[in-house]
Length: 282
Image (tube, rainbow, N blue to C red; front, top):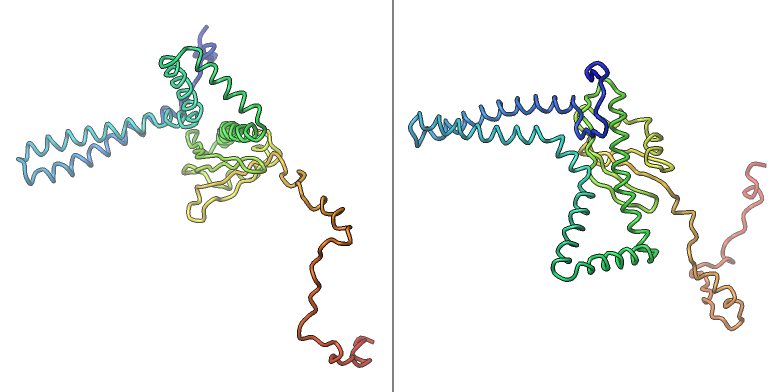
């Protein structure tokens, strides 16, 4: 089969970075290498020529520029992969911590100790209601970060004027009484108007009832806050001790607050209004 003709991928292939994005950052890396290497080489050569011979100063400048340019080019080139690692940072850190901790406990004690400890921790998490709800709220924050990323990718693909690599950077998410709150940093070429009218699509993607997008900073227009609402905290029942006081207050001997008469007010000194002042519109 001619893959170039049908433009198909091998089954099971997973693309972490799209091809247009990879090519764009490869070109940016080359430009960054040339600019940084030339700038650093000129500055270092001019500075070193004061204390070194001219030829040696030029050599030192070229070496310094090449090293600095290579470092900057590598960072620019791998930035799409670093962005993917940031998207999955919570899962990666959690998995590494879990497996490394279990391996260390297994070597230090007995191989069954990590499994027993893990079962006890899971039992406590799922058994205690408050702890279970807390863990569930943070799990939803992780899920919402991925759902927003997929939604932003679809929005940018559908807009032909936007560059495919300018995905917003999802900074952090935390639970709220109504759902989740996510902070997003918009890349150059995007603004809040590009996301205007897409709140309902965000709510659908996050399996929520409502989504709102507002500016999170008066100083930085790129910082946007997304509020995901999946429940109404005001509809729940609030335990109040006032109902238990009703029967107790029926007792005749129940203490009451003494009535305090108003001070400095004598109603007998207030003159009665005239008839024309009672009905001024008549």
